[in-house]
Length: 84
Ligand code: SF4
Ligand code: SF4
Image (tube, rainbow, N blue to C red; front, side, top):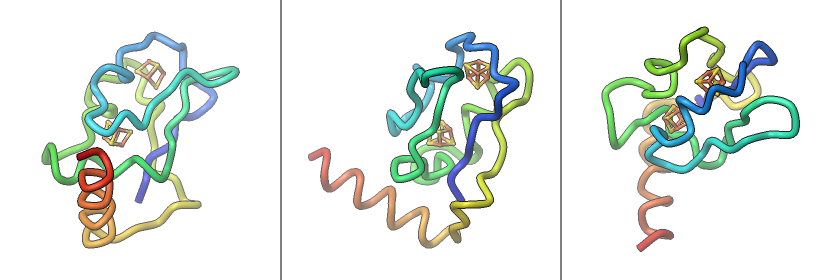
């Protein structure tokens, strides 16, 4: 599934440059993850890098965007085809 950033985010900017899919952006209030671009880092890393770098652990699974590993891999392939 895609991940989401909760309102506890302190806008520290640690996660944004680390996302390999450019799925993270500065939101109106806190940083946001674009679910159509988040593959949970599938295709790049063994685990979500935004979770690893967030100092306050405010990146969580997004229950509104449940996806299987296969679907995440398909999304990764689609994003790579589009960006080529
Ligand atoms: S899990 Fe990976 S792809 Fe998704 S927002 Fe975090 S860093 Fe980006
Ligand atoms: S690393 Fe965590 S606290 Fe910092 S901007 Fe990203 S989500 Fe917010």
